[in-house]
Length: 154
Length: 186
Ligand SMILES: [Zn+2]
Image (cartoon, rainbow over all chains, first blue to last red; front, side):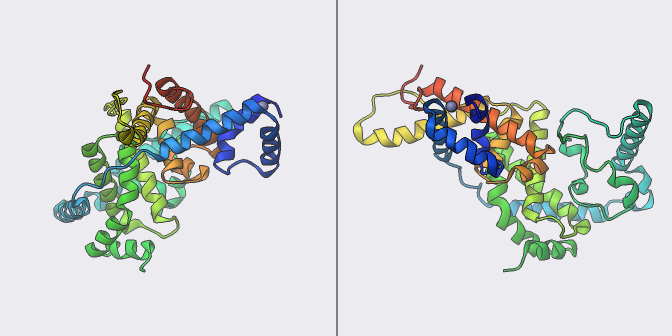
């Protein structure tokens, strides 16, 4: 393994995320190479520096405020008309998913591709129902396919 | 100690005491991530509050398949990234002023200076690199967990962290010399 490859792997080595066989190769190189040893030492210093940055205390009674806001939110929900239950089909998130699914299917059909690949973007929090992060409980079948948002895995 | 999952199920039944317990148990981690990312106490407080309200609203549909802490981290992360996406400026840390320190002050100033240099260098990174570094270094998440929170593959997280650390190192060396000694300004 040359210096360039070793230095590209130092970050993952630091995080204990490097495959076992590469760990041995990189460590052997580090023992023998001054330049890469210096890069490893710089990574050490960087992490000491990150650790030296203090965190200000949590604002006074943040938890109390959050719980109060939570109670208000639940009260609002109780008094609000129950549109969602009456007309679940109009939920924007569901419409978004349906459109996205249709677009993906159309794209896949047109291009003959087995799996679509889009840009690596994080879906904005506003566009996500909070339970996009968890397995769906409701009309599962259709939704699950597009729940993970834009394809970002490589 | 009652588990997070049991508390969430109680919250789903409208138990606000259980919600209170959950908030107190996890507010530190949420605050740490939000503040370190946004560098502004008011903004971080808003994000933490929004994240817990989303958690509360999600409770009726909650099933204990994912660790609650991971789930909350996902919410905080996405709210933070969304915040930046909307072009709200993230507060820039200011590099330390160089004074003539007395020997007794020197150690403390060195620490303060180092911390300020880290803040400055972190602020200069892109949002994704900054968030990945925060989740890795301060929350000690694995690449898979960071990937889940940021909607990226573990391999993409690996690249993000490697590039972020390199950029951070360069920024700190620029600010404070090869040994990151921040008392000598450019
Ligand atoms: Zn080398």
